[in-house]
Length: 488
Image (cartoon, rainbow, N blue to C red; front, side):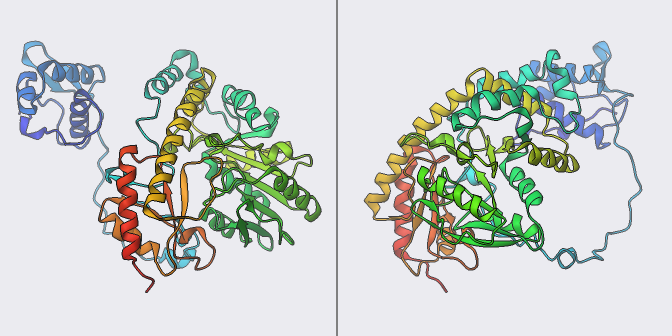
């Protein structure tokens, strides 16, 4: 029996070319058992007319499926489902599952209850997305990234693509880090002082797991990166909130601590940049107090208003600073590739811990990034982003001033966001819900604070919003602030 053309349909918004979508329809039908071996496929002409595509598109899809042994071609008789086509295994239906264990109670919810900044998954469908950390497709270097990825897929790089590195990293990428990325932060490091991770979040988790545990104390910025408190709590250690001022982390109160987490380049979320004098004072405090510093150097590339400040790690003479970096903000967040830099003894332990979790980041990703760096595409991308962000920041600043909104943070060096303060009594979580109905996304600030935290702070990012929408988006925010969703 022939498979009817009605079994095929194109899904609006589906990814991939038409040829790829047709291939997916056929393979899914075969693997699901709807199309059985020996059944005849619709003719290329008939399927093309049914789907509203060219006949050559269907013919190419069929030919591709023949080469993969999903279909066979029998001359003028047409195409048939191959007898050798892959088939999904068949298992008898089991009994309905019962939720016999309350895992929320068993785990104590110690991970799912951690504070986090909520963002809708379909953020890019909103006309005014003032949300942080997402990539702008109009700025990304699609062509050169694709070329680097294809090169990394070639025969010459077959081992880098397919091999198990065990606990090692791609030497080509490590070399690029040592030669191009770290020196511009003033950091001179050796291969045994670098470990690649699945983003900065993974790097921070590894550092916290190694350095903390029950009975230990970690200083975290307040307000600060929300995940830090959750990471510290997962180790059984105590998270001690540390005040932040116009120059970043305050040096006062750094006593009785084992580890201090800090964002000196762009304090999260206030954007304050720690001056060199305070960085030196923080290192002196660490030497006196005997604690280790974990430096999260996110967004250092986006220093476009003033010359970039030296990394805290570059000033470290005693080996007390563990440096965490990432390509998530500079390339794209889905890349999930970061790195740790520290003394060889620390990196050796971090490498062993990483090996218990994931061995190493995917080889193809590592090699692609290595080529992207080595061929100069990364620096071109950074320059493009810095120019775009500088212009957007100016537009944001002008719109914010025109609407009478209050900037609470600093951001004297650049970055990609503003830290904002609404009038006392305005609940920015309620404000965010009201604005979402108007197509505007903002990030309420409560998650950045320890405890209950302030309710009238929020963050506005400009990395993803189209420049021509900035003015109208800020105007809508100002109108909603004046209406003022109040604290209940």
